[in-house]
Length: 132
Picture 1 (cartoon, helix red, strand yellow):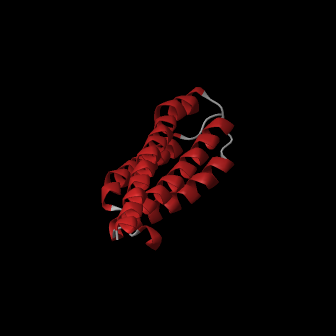
Picture 2 (cartoon, rainbow, N blue to C red):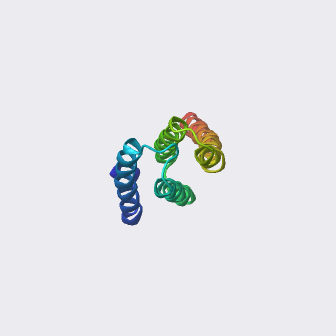
Picture 3 (cartoon, rainbow, N blue to C red):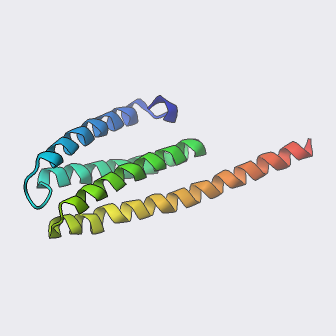
C-alpha cells in the first residue's frame, strides 16, 4: 500500500482488511446455508466502517491517491454485493440495501467530487503554464 502514502496505522488496517477479506471469501464459499453467516456480515460491516474512516482522511491525500483508493474500495464493495446476491435471503438483501448500496453510492459521490477537484487543479496548472 506504499503507493497511497498512507500512515502506518492505515496501512496496517488495510492489511488486516485484506486478511479478513481472504478469510471471509473462504468462509462464504464453504457456507451451505441460505444466508451468509452473521460473523461474515459483521466482518463486512467492519470493513465498510474502516473504509469510511479512510474516506475521512482523504483530505490529507493527493487527488490521484484518493481516486485509486475509491476504485479499490468500490471494487471490494462490489465483491461483497455479489456475495450477498449469490446466497439470496432476506438477511442478505437487507444488508446489501442498508450497508453496501449506500457505501457504493457514497464512493460514487466522492469520485465525482474528487474528479472535479482534479479537473480544477489541471485547469489551474494549464493556466499557470500559459501565464509564464
